Amino acid sequence: MNFSKEEVLVVTKATKTLIVPKGIKKLVCIDIGLETLILNEGIVYVSCSHNELNELIIPSSVTHLNCSYNEIANLMVPDGMTHLDCHGNKLTELIVPNGMTHLDCHGNKLTELIVPDSVVRLHCHNNGLTELIVPNGVMHLICNGNGLTELIVPNGVTHLICHGNPLGDLSKYSELIKPKLVSLYSMCYEIVDKSNIPKCFAGVDEVTCDGCKNKVIKDLVYVSYKGTVGGYIRKTIKCKKCF
Image (cartoon, rainbow, N blue to C red; front, side, top):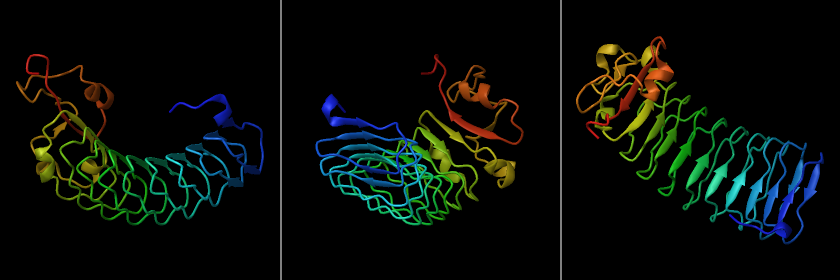
């Protein structure tokens, strides 16, 4: 996103109240002790994280918003927003409009979440979710630390972290055949018996190529998690010979 100097406002001086002037399209006011923020009509990009806001009225013109680490309990998200980072607040409900592509709402108090089909990147970990329907377009999914008992992962997911959920049925993961990383650390250790783990899962000491079954010792996942007690990594990979 390109803005002229006249359209950008960066506030670094501590202030409790900020009224954004007309004509500003990009606002950055991070960690300045802000308690009240009044946004102008026409603003597009807002980054106001690490403040003390307990409410925020968002103009319909805003497409990108980062209001993480505030005290916000209610947030009305306009239809035109595509990128929302509201993690670390006090939200108990969140209505996500169609057209949202990037959503980070982790670390709130959400017990339910309806995710639009447009979302490709979803971070909803550390909430109180017991159900989650993941749209087919999602490629990056982090949903650990909830109360999910079932999780159907779309084929397009390339990064998945889902530990810390009481997931009992892992059979659906056997269909995850595209190159991807699934972190099941602590979930497998605490909940899933090793004999019930599908063949596509292997202990961290058994990272292999899915094509020829040769060991892939230099794989990033192997290096990162080698020696992790009880942790299991599912990594569908192909060595250079089989790629």
